[in-house]
Amino acid sequence: MDQRRMCPNCRAFITTHDKVCPYCNERVGPRAVERRDPGAILGGFIPHARFVTMIILTINVGLYLATVVFSQRNGQGSFFSVDGQTLFAFGAKLRAAIINYGQWWRLVTAGFLHGGLMHIGMNSWVLFDLGAQVEDVYGASRLIVLYFLATVFGFLLSTFWTAALSLGASAGIMGLLGAMIALGVRNRHSSAGVAMRGMYVRWAVYIFIFGLLPGLNIDNAAHLGGLAAGFCIAYLAGTPRIETAWSERLWRGAAAACVLITAACFLKMYLWFSTATQ
Image (cartoon, rainbow, N blue to C red; front, side, top):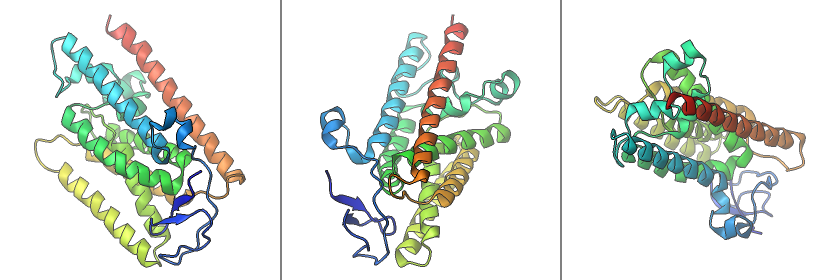
């Protein structure tokens, strides 16, 4: 069993026996044992420290390849870009479909789709690093809930903000960014907390500025909704406590519910897809 863990205040590596971080002198609680032994996860193929993150990345890549194949069969896209009709068929967010036809499952499925190789490449790069940080600090259960609700609230705000087609993991990613900002705010009296808050706030500002550049068609409404949801949930939730605490059982139950709802949304997408593409 790995004896290392990350300090939730300064993110330095400490041991599971430390009661006070030797780097920032902040008190740390007991480790919430949510990780698995590396050998128990596909023979160690998936790093145990970012197990949930890697699962999300795998789903994103798998769906991107599926949309590429479907698009190319219809002679409308390439490996580097997927056409809008295909993305809509696979569950991208569109106001008319959600409001007029009650396809609310698109608020979930849209978060796992990407419109091109650059799109999925950039999101995967950020998610790989940021997801691992959030998973280490907040634990797997909170990560799942944060990512799910940030995606839903991000595309919900986007639905009321714009009628345009929208998709991508960035709404969920912004939720994770909001969670790290919340961690800095909760620890605002420590120098590490101040530094952390400043760094992730700058990340958010850069992303919003990037989204204002002409011609990129970036959905800043989804970014804003995801960021706000992630911040609020993480600020109220805090970091994991001892594993047997009732609150941790509640978070594990909430994470399981999010997984089931996500699976149900993809089932709804498949049933609609199978009839719409005949």
